[in-house]
Image 1 (cartoon, one colour):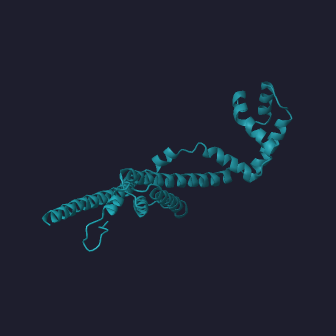
Image 2 (cartoon, one colour):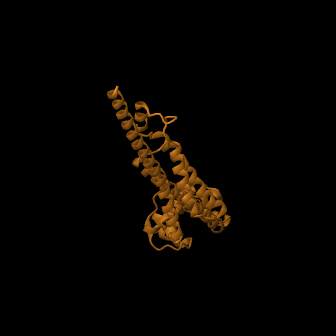
Image 3 (cartoon, rainbow, N blue to C red):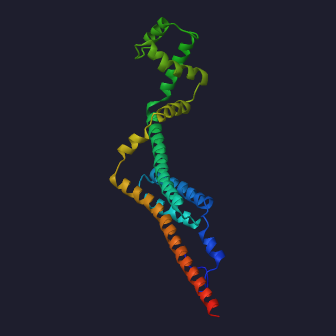
Length: 253
């Protein structure tokens, strides 16, 4: 930031007041947020399609967020903290998006091998046989059903909790093979743990680059804030000096 006055003329009071006005919040936060979203998307796409995770990208995301917020004229401690928080959010979101996509792809491939057309026909037959027992089969009927179909279940409670909902879904939905596989994947995705994924995928360099990304975003806005305050302070000194010189000149006349 430079002195807005030209040719060394003293800065006007209006210009000095304008420099001291609070920074805008909406524009830098909007630009920072959009950049954070773009950074998360790039991170996820790189992992999913290139099968490569580059920790250095976290540093770049932080720099991009800081630059975007500075373009929006960000300054002040609040926006510096927001820049760091957006960098953290972007990196974490990108990693989570990659985890969800990779987990779903892996489970889909596994279920494609495990859930076959023959298995689907077996479940259709089983559900049709279950329907013949009516809406409220007794425990004895369930035990006979389990024995007849040679199911690996010994407890009636377990059968009611785990198998009955699946049989009822087959009766209500009459699913295709793809629908059956998709239901299984969705069920397993509910229990997929992002924390466990982070533990398995942990590398010390990830922490380093994530820290650098957050620190860079925060530092860029923080540095701009310090520079702005220094310029304003210098201009205030010059304004007071010019005012004293003007008064001395008037007194001399």
